[in-house]
Image (cartoon, rainbow, N blue to C red):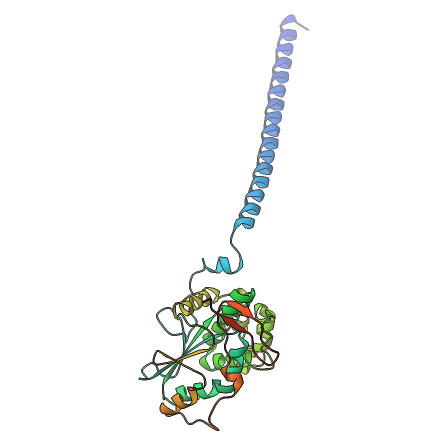
Length: 294
């Protein structure tokens, strides 16, 4: 072999070795970059997880979160922002306003005694009946059943006025109205159980989803806020043409509006009331009363 050929072979070998080293260096660099990228993604994922966890912990929940919801008014609600429920014709000259708390035992007694009569008078065109709902018991005894039941009533009202009327009656019925100290209305499952006794709601998937999702929670809070503006001293409160009427005088006042009173008068149970915010515990035959501070 000539010296020339030997030198050419050596140069070729060196070139091949250099090219191989360059390829290997590129592979090593790519591998390092990939490892760095994976590490960075891991750090970002951890940081993102921590951020989401902190955000979740600090984000408002429940009824605090409901304050930030977009207002969704149920169909068939009345007033500028759906702040009351109307029975009868808005154009009726006379008006009866009823202020209630769905957890209030005195309201349950009142509705069991006079509720259907009030509704019939409105449906017969004697006056317009406006129902306003508050959360005095939630504030006095703790819990959220008053608000939650309002939200569920909103879901029923969205189905139809008849569904609302029947559900409202069931919630106040002796069968389903809980003891004042039991916050059963805070449980969606219980509210749905009661609704299952109302034919219009029993198989309504939209109603059930609205209750479980709290679709009308913001509406319930707005109704509570409007209730507080009325400055009522207790529940139930009845106002005819803007003037408070004692429950003992209600039959006579309704008669003046053209309502026929079967049997006349109201019983003792219908005359009890709940007033905010101090709680006193009366005898076993009486509903609890919530008195306003002097």
